[in-house]
Image (cartoon, rainbow, N blue to C red; front, side):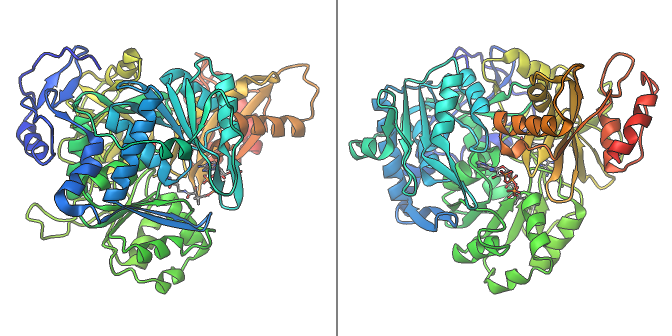
Amino acid sequence: MNSTKKQNTPINSNIEHWEKQANLVSWYKSPKTILSTNDSGWTDWFFDGELNTSYLALDYHVEQGRGEQIALMYDSPVTQTKQTFTYFELTELVAKFADVLQKQQVVKGDRVLIYMPMIPQAAIAMLACARIGAVHSVVFGGFAAKELAVRIDDARPKVIVSASFGIEIEKIIPYKPLLDNAIELANHQPSSCIVYQREQLSAKMNSNRDHNWQILMDMAKPIAPVSLKSSDPLYILYTSGTTGKPKGVVRDNGGHAVAMLYSMKNIYGMQAGDTFWAASDVGWVVGHSYIVYAPLMAGCSTILYEGKPIRTPDAGAFWRVCEEYKVNALFSAPSAFRAIAKEDPNGALMNDYDLSHLQRLYLAGERLDPATYHWLKDKTQRPVIDHWWQTETGWAIASTPFTDENCNKLIPTKAGSAGFPVPGFNVEILDEYGKALPANQQGTVAIKLPMPPGCLTTIYQDEQRFKSSYLSTHPGYYVTGDGGYIDDAGYLFIMGRTDDVINVAGHRLSTGEMEETLSSHSAVAECAVIGIHCALKGQVPFGLVVIKNGVNESDQILISSLKNKVREDIGAIASLKDLIIVERLPKTRSGKILRKTLRQMIDGQDVDIPSTIEDSQVLTELSPKLT
Ligand code: COA
Ligand code: AMP
């Protein structure tokens, strides 16, 4: 984020490719330098270019004559609400909310934290920040007050934007009390909060600090986007690492804009006027990139869906949305389709809807298991494209191109594979010493530097963690944290995380963080949390705890209080599937808990017992409890 940069000589052969892609973006000042290194030695894309992301997503399309086209469609089965916004209307609302923020003294570089459910105001707030160069940090609504407080303390926002409540199927979740609680827990205090009062439930306001969204909007005047440097940060998005402290992934404006536009055309095959639906949440990277920024930058119509794949009202919900908005490409997590397949195994509800506009389906967030891949392909008779990426990269590292270079032939997808590295990502499989492995051998999936545009620029205020998490293990490479292999034909298979991160229904969670939460309970001596297999959610967390001597509570009470603690401190999305009390945990002689061995025992797989085990008797004792 330092502004004094030195120019570098081009360092890879992709320069021309990215220069060409950058020319498709409407910069205020076109970049002359495509790739350079900044003071911390990391790559800077397009560093002398100037642009505004909100302009590219909104005003630009109005100028191009798309003002009357629908930009955003809000569909909320949980509140029975539908609303559409043209590019003209959305621009006006964003420009006014930018004024609201400015009147709250928000200036370029200030952080604005957004803690909101899936309502249009969340996207409006994000785009308004981008308009004035404020850095937004959206926190997923499923995180509890304590998690929110950790993010408030790290991002130190001047303003927090929230809403009175969110809805989970039939359960109302009041956001405002969670926010009040988080602010009480945090050391940093925002100067103000702006709260969108939803019709069904109004939040109690704190007269010294809270403002009503609508009242401020009624007094606002639309303001113009400001010119920003390519390297100016657009947002911080917290994601789970291996410790209790989440990592604040920082994204720039310039590289992000180029990557978003490139991916819409070349990965998703979308053109201006098409309808793109990412059935995710704005609190996750998929929501940032493919509900808000990329579809709008590409002049598409995007859908903000406040509902679930099932039970809102049934397993035909996705197909209903596809018909109603003539969706051309649908993107969601495998868990969503596993849930649909469970409720409607024959895909009968699909037949109730006209899916003639739907061309392709995209899956990410967790591994697409072959059974779900085949089910989806068979039932929809459409290409089902698994693609692999992370919060850190912001867009797909690997995917299967749906046409060849001449745009006329379908490349076959392969069940279980996330496809081929996308141009710009130089993917290699490394052994533990950093040596590249041959085809079909499983190892660490790494990306040879430099990373393409759009990837993280650092970890917010923690350059050291950025380097130690991703760059120091194998110099010259970014280590993804995933394990996998590339087969003879070049298809990449991502087999799972190699660290303490797990994926629960496409939500990335840290078992290390859950362990820290359990350990902070006064009765716990030590604990382990592992991700075990779940047929619906891919993985679910499972806890093992050793209770301190002298604790007199019954096991039943302890288990329920520990499970509740995780829900209350982290959020319901991190609910432990199960928790058992054990006498001892299996460890190596150096004291490391044998998490992999425990996972294998619970999942019923062949168990690797390391030769370094301290006492194999522990496993024998545990066996009846785990199998
Ligand atoms: N705000 C508050 N609470 C939330 C929430 C949010 N935004 N999202 C989830 N929760 C809560 C749920 O209410 C539930 O609470 P409960 O245990 O009290 O019932 C808990 O967190 C777990 O939610 P979820 O993981 O959604 O499980 P589910 O059983 O309600 O639904 C699926 C299962 C598979 C239908 C659902 O997980 C799903 O749609 N998965 C796809 C996920 C996805 O799109 N991921 C995006 C990555 S691309
Ligand atoms: P997140 O940062 O929340 O997007 O989670 C990123 C992680 O999700 C990756 O590091 C992978 O472990 C997993 N993931 C995402 N997409 C895929 C995929 N298509 N196949 C396998 N794993 C995936």
